[in-house]
Image (cartoon, rainbow, N blue to C red; front, side):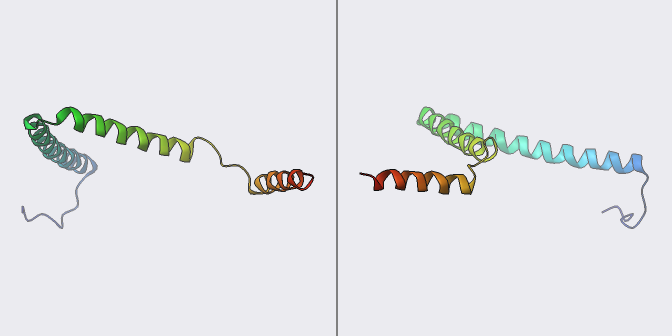
Length: 92
């Protein structure tokens, strides 16, 4: 700790500190990711793991698109369709 924790910093100094902090996080994350990649390279079931990860990501992508891309049908529209279907079944 440098002892200047209570001192007010200028915008330039604050920006430099933020960038340095982000760089530190990025380097730490990259190091962790490389460790995971090395571990995966040693495994004999790497092809299966990649295929499973692809399926998982595809399913997640489908869920996200279903959630945000299309609007759900209106509640009253669903009720009207159900009522029409039941009326059609009454005539049988």
